[in-house]
Image 1: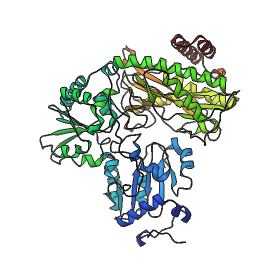
Image 2: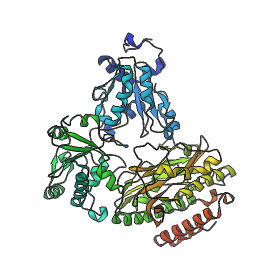
Image 3: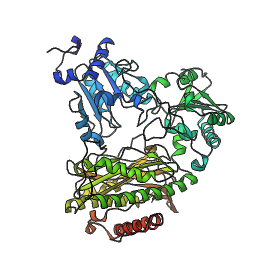
Image 4: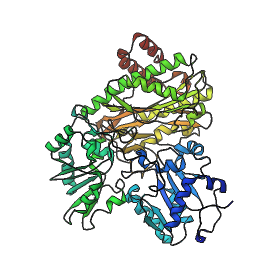
Length: 616
């Protein structure tokens, strides 16, 4: 049988994909036809949008459409001879399953966020060759890094636009949902106050204009939220701020007349979403525009006249919104109580019904969502629940599907990582519970994870400390036993915004973009874990607030306040592995959980929680 795709003689090499897979993946075939017609040696299709978001609207999920891979991090490279998907260790097990039969080979990143696909292209594309990209889907910083590497073989990056526009017949349209206002009673600051703070920082940095393209930056700045991206309450838009005017670039039909009136009265101009490039082109040589090249797509960057001075800096809203104000912090403490009530009701329901009726990973997730939805401020989930029973718990970012997922039983271990979006905050919590009598090995694994969690939760550290300097605390107990986990230990969390928010993180990557010092008011996750393929996964996650930790003659210190409120499964704790201080921490935490949650529970629920939070 012959392939119906003509392959140029310049690609004479061994075909990696089998002929059957090559023929069956018509989507790959469509891309390869375009490579031939455009005289390209390869192309890169990232899981990205023009705003370089982690979660993207369905319109831009081309990588998933071609490959079937549903993870949030990945880059797909395609040549006429081979297709490969690069992703990190969070998705290895998941990707093997989802790529099966696609003709696309999984390429495992050894270190999260390392762009190894670039080195692969350098080796597999001929000298003087060309690689097609859509510059709207790549940051300026990434384009520069690729060009610097490819110059060694005179390989060129060609902006060929959207390679999917002619072959994705049933492609979802751009989102059209209306935005809504996030009231100042929740946000704690008005739009005008935020604009003044942004302009003050602009003056300090010498900028006349500030370009915002990250959707969460825009949502925070304008006190708006939307439904354009699943799980992240943001809207597709751009913004440009100067001392004289503020322009929000967004489709007109997404804004109510009432909000249009408010914007106008506050001096906020509205222009169409697609007019942003034209606005940038009108800037003069006297303008100094502040942007983040790692968060601004290359197409947009190139719209700025060369005569303009560009100040490459972390965006001001990113720096401002990560430090929660007092209003937000008070709401966060409140939302954690309400979310803890939902978690308590869920685990009580699970325990009482596990042997009465079939409960799957999906139906368990749905039930937890229903408990969260009982709160009047609940808007939706903050990410797809990771409900992994037994071996599925070892898939770090596992997402159960109806008809394919496991049915829970009164044995084994169940890992549940979930979160809610509320008007008064965003939650993210992981609990691992024993569905029956745990083994000694399971208890040991869980207790080592718990020791790391406690070590980080109780850390006291000098002001200016970065997350990577603390991460050893979460890993040491596991490392001492010869164990490890392949994901970061902590990420920033937004306020009724993205569940993953920079610029802080707690991870091994000292050079990571998310690498700002921890500051009072930052909300960050604490989530060490351990994963045994095809057996179980264990992760314990709470959110922690950075707070003042006192002053000494050696300077100012900071510490963490654990704000998540939900019991830990003491059946999975091997007490002999804990120190006295660690036992005290567990008991004090459980005392706080009971005291704060029980007043909002029924008497029966409170009795159940009292049993779960007894001293160990």
